Image 1: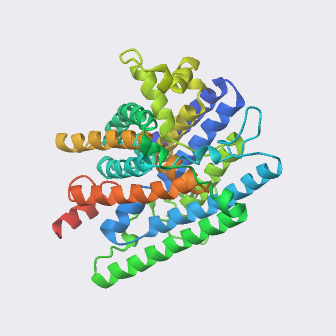
Image 2 (image 1 turned 135 degrees about the vertical axis):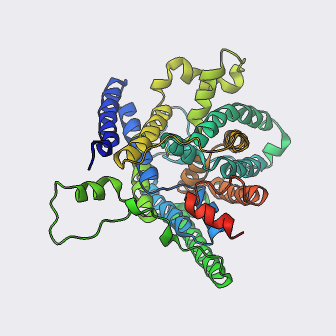
Image 3 (image 1 turned 90 degrees about the vertical axis):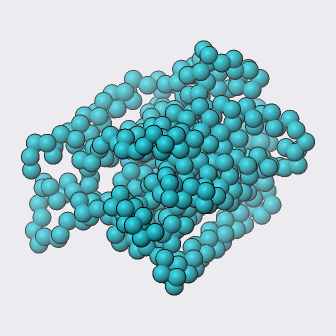
Length: 433
């Protein structure tokens, strides 16, 4: 091994030490936990090459649903854990957040039981289209940015920019008659917690069946792309040796370089999400802190009405480094960077045209607008809502998936395949078209 090989891992470990020092400087143990959770979530997203947007892109473009099935496993495992947390809180006298009066205990997760309306559908569709243009979802854009992807940096900037108009539009829409046509649906209110869990698992099982059935159709059509070719040589397991020393490159490769399967990624992400739920008494979210960042960046240039943006102005006045969601997103960003550094594969990549850059910017703006207008992104409005037994999560999932397919149909062959195929696979796919 030459010295150059060790440079990135050394930087990665130094960065971990610096983050530990940064974490110690934060005010309060909750912020320490937010930072730790973000590091775990970010490291996992990168180590498993995991993304919510890919669950739609891969099965549409390649006909294989390995990531789609892993996402269903993630939802199922998390739902079971959230069920236990919510049942414990109910036995302790907690009530849903939307019914709680001052001083009452709140059932964790009910903060993500959102009002269902046409805004949920429109926001989800816009967000889904943005995912395909930007090459990633809310968490995926932040993760790719941490990995050094220039496209993600552009998408992230415009995600933040789009959040303001999206939130403003939502607040204005809340004062219309169309908003009043909708309502909240917390499944335990109708089926009890046991019934809500059973219904959620049955729906996830049905989705799993649909993915398998669609895979079989694509195999018969000859348009199925086997996922076995996904891994690059350096991230595959090393050949087994009869005798392997613990302090060896083989051990380091196993611990920090070898790619995790999507299923392993699902299980570790579930642990991270459960950690957030148990320690913070509310689920994981990504896009709300980006709205806070929007206010922090633009408040000197734009007049943010207090009656609309009051909660975000308060967070900014209190300091971004005192906002738990912001700290968790910082941890996620650096968790992704550290994962690539330890694997010696971190690069700054701006290998795209100006035209592609415009697509990424538009995609990022749509992500931000859709997330705020739809009351959340793929994490808060879909993942955390479904696993907290809110019907709004299922509505957002359907709308986001529809938007993703629309985006793929409209922009197929342009930038939408990014994040789905390696560059060599992409060249081969274009050659065969």
